[in-house]
Amino acid sequence: MAGGTDDPRARPYPVSNMQFLKSGFRSGKLATCAGLLLIVFYIIPEFFGGVRDVPISSPLSDGAQLGETVDLASLDEVFAALDYHLDDVRNGQPVPRLYVDQVPVDIDSVPDVDKRKDTFIKLVLPLILSVNERIAAQRERLTALLDAKVTGRTLAAADRHWLDNLAARYRTDPDDPFALLDRVDAVPVSLALAQAIEESGWGASRFAREGNALFGQRIWTGEQGLAPEKRAEDATYMVRRFDSIADSISAYIHNLNTHPAYEEFRRARAELQDHSASGPDSLGLVATLRGYSEKGMEYVNNLRLLISSNRLQDFEAAELAR
Image (cartoon, rainbow, N blue to C red; front, side, top):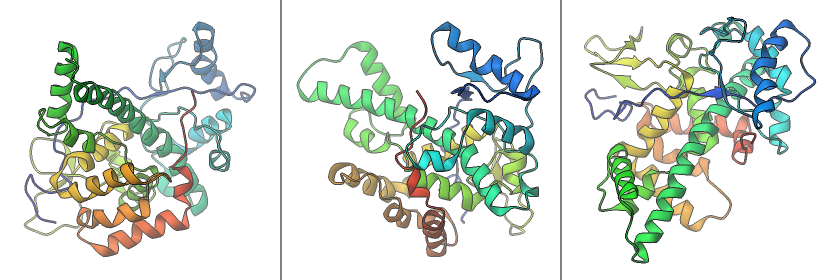
């Protein structure tokens, strides 16, 4: 892929660190010491007005901390405590608001391929849904403001300021808000999962384990990155390192929503919004992302195979627990 700041994998704007949190406890599953820690996260908040989001790395009441590194054993205990199973999600059960910052350090050591796949999807799915949820809220407000403009109502100063800031973030002209509407939109869950799987090798790549980099986004100057072991001698790019998985997902979705290389993707997605009642067609949209990888159509075919063989479209209707 060509170098320079116009590379479609380059991150167009820095994304502020987001505090992604976890909650969504289902009672009756705590039997271990790890479970006792989870009481602080899941039961106590419910005494103060229902389910709340609590940082995974926040200090616990006794001063203990879950820490920045996560291993599969501790993650499995959390999954069990939450009664979190992908078959249940496929059957319409909500996804727990489990937001883990780091890729498990030992995910590449899992000999059972199906278990590694299951773990990776359960880890990434809530984070994709959370980012899409935030974008959906932006889109809802944007739509309401556009409706107001169409009917001739004058927008409040705060609303005009919000529109200007949103247009700047999404790299559009604030005087063309309908172009902004094409950019402020969610990415199909199955497509995001497939690209995360393809780019990170189900989370086992060095970039994923050392830098939470699930989508192979490249940088050249000014930001911390990881140097690929195999790249052309004259190449200077690095793979962008992220503080959390959530930051990686947020940057990836923002990249698809803003970079000129993905205008075809956004146009096709907008047409589906206007004319499709069956939801996003991730298999159709994949073809618009052939420029994401130097592999071109081979990359497109790989994504389609991942979506189909792993039934990733089953998660399009998934929702986070309320």
